[in-house]
Length: 354
Image 1 (cartoon, rainbow, N blue to C red):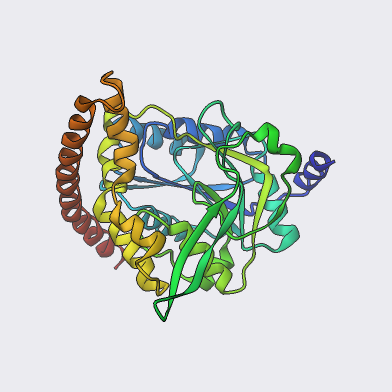
Image 2 (image 1 turned 135 degrees about the vertical axis):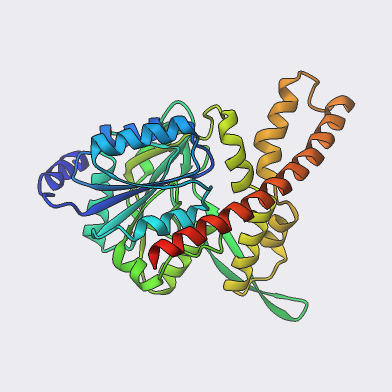
């Protein structure tokens, strides 16, 4: 029944209602697979703006050719970009009713866009999030099926404190087992892996906050939209997959280290605390104390395991500590290097705008 309704709805979409904005998440090596899936599996008219910040030559050349062949808008910067900065660059070129933000390491399933449009048109939602899956096989394991987020006020030591909270539904569960229970419904959050936003809602909120460099930016947008009365919906008829298990190339490492670097993560968390008047105890405080956890979890630990030393041996613990120290030094150097190149890039950009 739902498939028939979507097919009927799709046949009535003659105008281009959506601009798809693709921006870097944390790597570049799956960019071709991601973009190819969008053109292969999107069955309604769309515009596309692709933001490419500092990708390696083979990706840059692919995107230049793809933009020429397919006629999409390509924005190229030679320096690495924070995600919200990249999205704001693209938003200057969006004139459609909706914009879909999608990361450059996400692949989509056949017919993925139509249900998002249908949900927004039928509910008036400001934001619609699809069923986001993770890893291989494609579209099989849930990453995000909506969730909860917001600020809770609690009494602590005679004071009222504001604490950020987030709960993602069904992460790690089988799509096949959950499918009978999944339905379109209001939710409190969507993720920037893929979300569709009504352009008028972004006009109300203003540009995405570029002081949130790397983490919690999806919470900031969802909470801001909700604060202004906008509704957020989860639409499971649309399915995409975040390729979190794709092999990383050496050409990915510099950007990955910057995106999940201590400086960007700490700056983002402090900005969230200031903006939403949050206590730095609780979840936010825990994250501030453990900046860099992604690098330790997804770079250092797999490297130590690959050496076959055993998980709890003295040799593996010593190696882990040594690599952690090396990582922190390298990460600080990369962050300092980017500060100089980013200032130069922003100066050139502002001169062009004038």
